[in-house]
Length: 66
Image (cartoon, rainbow, N blue to C red):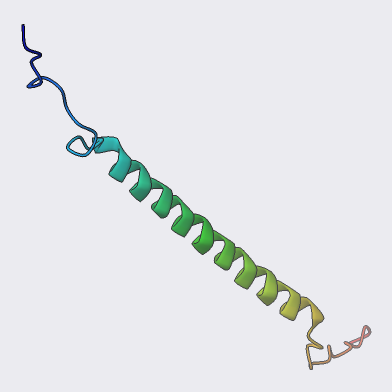
């Protein structure tokens, strides 16, 4: 009896539908992490700048007896 090869699927013809979805999900996650890191970095730099700036203005002393 000859072998029937019609039910066999070669690897080159079969594409896993989840492979592209997983790659897209990993890429989106990487972009999200990079954006979050950039936002944190900018926030940290702004906080450090605000804390280390001289302020420039003096607070006027108020007279206590008026």
